[in-house]
Image (cartoon, rainbow, N blue to C red; front, top):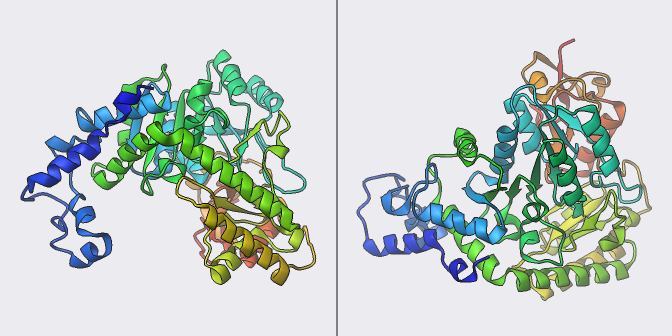
Length: 483
């Protein structure tokens, strides 16, 4: 990485030059630097709204960058150790889907764990590729899905030698990392591409004490959520490419779905955040890891809660662990994760990332302070004292291995009927069902509905998880394929 070059921020600098010019706008957006929408200016500020501008020659164009955006993307590639980088303004969903759509076409097979984000399976609906799932192990105590086992992956590759790609979570939402270097080696030996969903792995590129990043491991493509641990604005993301990818083809794929009206607020935030990480990332993530480890020790000293970390590593299904993730198992105090999530927000004014059936996740990043950690620890101690109940491990696992009956695309576009959820056992699901966050489907189109899945889904709903995906927002009924 060229540190001197990394001090530049081309998009940000171009916006500053533009702001000083006081150009009269006869283009979109129609608020005309905020003059047409004073309430928006009052909310966001004059400077912010004044920089919400359209693509123009001095500011380049995201669909075909040739100047400042191109330069900024080159700097991002250098900072992340990639051959090429693309600014994405449709969230990491758009980055993930661009990866899958680049690698796969209708009828192709892609090997992947089932505990993927819904954006991956949505991409399969769009392109018609066939998933080959390597079902992860589930930790018997904390109930979370683990990483990809090499032997299971090798078996899937041997049984499906015509698969075109392997997709890996690096890390999972909970911080679990697979043996990415070995996965890349195995895939490349068989002519398969390796795609990495690094929605929760931006920081891996800027601190060598953390698990290996996708580009360092030799992956072909990686989707990186700069807005999560990287500090950019919500919805901004990066798509990284390795040396062997056809950049022109990838650009065509990106432009199938990417907006032609990219927000310069998002683009400049990517540019500035990349510069910040390149210049200060190592020390920043040293601090983040230290805060998370301190929080883990303090939470575990309360008793009842289990803030897990490197102690989980087994060299196989948990090859490594991202210590910046503060994941906490809550069921040993008799409360589900979503119940603790609700208590933290409603009673203590603490907003954590998510709560599910067994766990909570507090996202620790470059913007956190040690006094915030102390407040979280104090609140959890209070919750244990005031709200703990008899322990129940009913529906402890966050992941239930699916029975795949048909492809997501075929199921999604098949003729369906809406029937009561309690009557769906044995039928093929025609839509998504998930708790969001984390956005990992409980059911995806084309999967068999079992009684275990029905019971788990209704339990999650009863406990207050945000259930998303079904046509029936009340989740009283599900769309199943007509027999």
